[in-house]
Image 1 (spheres, rainbow, N blue to C red):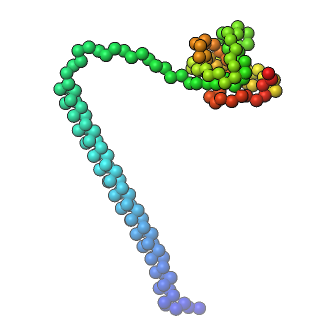
Image 2 (spheres, helix red, strand yellow):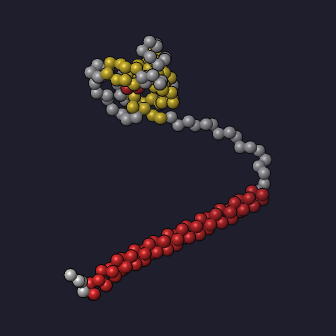
Image 3 (cartoon, rainbow, N blue to C red):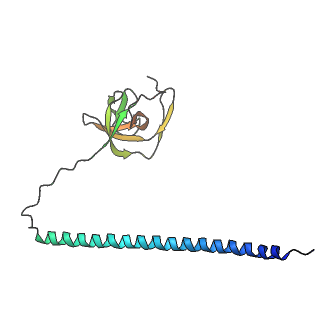
Length: 167
């Protein structure tokens, strides 16, 4: 059985049209990407030129500025400490990071203390009553200036009462 000549021709042209459409699409994507890269390159050159002009102006200003006759007095170094709150009533502040060390004072619930950037690597397991906590020891300073170590489960960034503690 023979197919009509029109069908043979149309079957051959459809793939050619599809190939042509794909090529046009690819060409448009390539043109778009080249234009975008050129725009970004131009913006980068403009930023570099502006930075060079600013550097030149700063150098010219510093060359004209008179030298200071005396150095300014040194400013006291202010160290921002992280604020923590006591979450266990009568938390013991100790002289060292373990239960064996002497108790310096007890801290009331919600007392504000400051973290002194020291934490033990070893975590201790301590039974708090209804819960057992596995935490490191944390060095803190109280409002009255006393420094010592508290069990990590007894302090937090937020003011709340820790549940599971036997009083």
